[in-house]
Length: 570
Image 1 (spheres, rainbow, N blue to C red):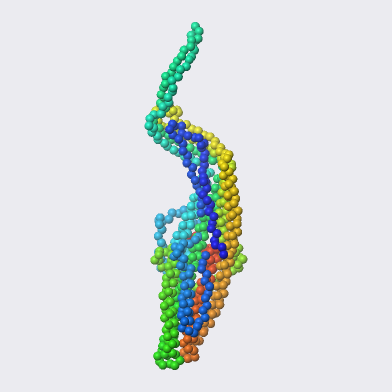
Image 2: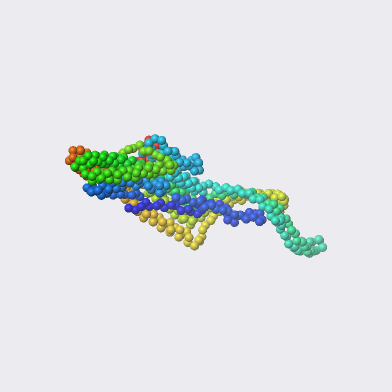
């Protein structure tokens, strides 16, 4: 079955909101000063379980068979923690939920939020989910990602607004700038009445002061982009696609958290049930041992020392497994507490003592159709496709001209009242229209367009693979539900038959009709089939949670109706 296809992020694009409303040749008119214009780059980053097969061991009449049966019971007890151990390996990091509806921009209470205190009362599944949605850091981090996408959207919209900048500069030169007027000679003719007279005049070299060396300048620039070939619209659509992808990511985080809480909650219930089953089995085996010892030491001919030793070994072997069963309960509870956002030493108690009945898996075709309609991986992927289409339009706009209006107003402060800063010459304004048309850039734009078209074709093929993967994940979950439901139904009948067989064997043993070996076999076999039924019930719940993770929103909708964790829901 293919794994979840990773989401294709929208790459950062240079000059996302860049507007160049001023002519490139615009320079300061003060000597010794140059104009530097920085252009900002604004971008947007739009920014699997263990299946164990049942193992059936036929009880044997030998001493080794009792040991094997005890080890099988221990193996079944480990099922309670198969799905909770990854919580410690991965930091119990959930993977996703939330659309729009909460306030992602609300500031947190502190820079480093503290873990929530441990609850004092037993919690049901709905209460655990609500507590996790409020306290777990995964949904909070996903909401911050949604806030980032919203901020990037506003950045893209800023290109529609006029760009106004103000600058103040104070400069001190090493000396006063001067203008050297060179020596010049010229002839002129004067008619005094007696005829023209030619005279030659020489003007000596002169050094004219232009400004004082302490120069202050205040400048205001206004620009308005009129047309850029549709690149602004493309960047806004790309930002909207990024917001949709971030919303899907946030909601998927919460759905993954619901899945983790559900499986680990039922894991705690399973671990407790197996521990209680182990204690009950130990009590029965110890009672059988005591009865066998009473008959053996009392001189009974039908109970030999080997019978008593067999019962002793069986009781001690199962009792040694109780430590592991107790540890499994602690481990499962710790994993659940970690998923709920409690501190590392937090404790949580579950309210349920029995695993619920197997859910109805429903129709496979309907489940796959719901997955195609609701799966958040597909939603995020489609957002990525829309972002790629917007980037293609952005690149296409590079062939078209850029038209913008510009205006500038500047004034100079100087102690000198002459030259370039004479009275009435200190304040200047200008306005104009800038048209930029790219003529040749080495076929770069054409290559980028071919790249974007190839990426879109690649995404189309990847979407087919993703849809097939989603369908296979739903099919696998539904088939596991059906298998677990059948095993649980057969297990219920088997448990009833094993219980009746054990009861009758105990009565027959008291009457001396069966030996100790047969009694031990029935007691251990009953424990085995009860553990197998518990396992089937747990696997049914785990498969249902996996199906809801792929396409289901039933748990979140239910929580929204009853009001649990409303602040954390989209």
